[in-house]
Length: 390
Image 1 (cartoon, rainbow, N blue to C red):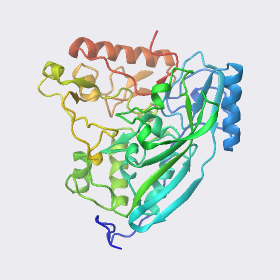
Image 2: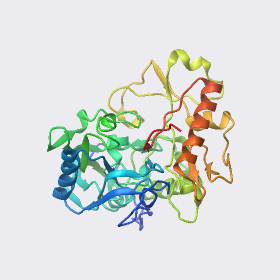
Image 3: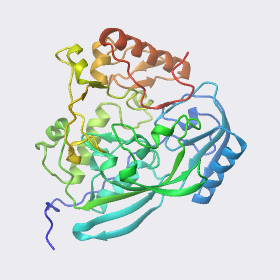
Image 4: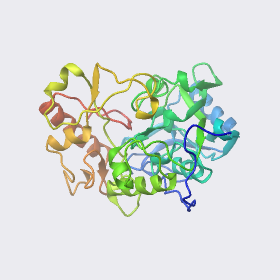
């Protein structure tokens, strides 16, 4: 059977080791021990689950007792509170991958446990010639956190390859599978994220495993990001060997301090701290002429891969550009202990010994500065325990 898309190049598969995707420590006693920011006070009880039954039991116990619950993967999307977290902190230690189906042009359907470090999954898919995650290389965190945020980078979003998400529904008290069409994916959001706050800092739906559907190919999905295309010597829309996409993405991310490195304080962060604002078209003229303007796509997916039409009512702009042009340039507030990354204006960092309060104060200062200059209120991307209040 012949496929309607190019499947293979002659480029040999090279080793693609995963990057270290978590700083979370077994037997942790503080939020600082469990997060890439490295800030936060003591935790009440740490539960490290090694089975789905243990996951469900821990969540059910917390809800039955009225105990606050925080589910932590790689801890890369959490800003901890200095007061700590008095409830149950639940870590999923399961790291399995199961192939449900793999058949030529029909593609592959696989399931990955929520506790699997994200970059290990990316490496696995590239090695098995399953295309669709290569541009998401090097993102810290776990598989279970990825659909909550609809993680994305360099023209790809996880929503493009999600098949179903297996969750424990805390309200109903049972396990269910949510089809991709019902996940309400959008730019850095999902059905799951929209339920955060209803029952504390973790959503109503606790991810147990994620099902993906991939094309079978050692060529990437079409390159959809100009900087990445340039790094590859390719054009937007080209397909290139997935291993080459991974190498280029890791190089770009490392240059921005977005690949975890214990020796680099710029990586003691939650990555991009603010989401890119999506603003009404009627307000676009208030932006300076040089401010970036990106299309927002209609439908479930907000990417070039979706084939969805461009929305006419809103435009996305760059939070990093707004921050930089509001005077918060790279390295702002150095030497810290909380400061803007020296490599990327969108990352707030712990230079060593920062408290949660100091990071929050910096975030509020940036919010206020951008709002005063551009009339736009930036929204935090990570889960901020206790909020951005003083």
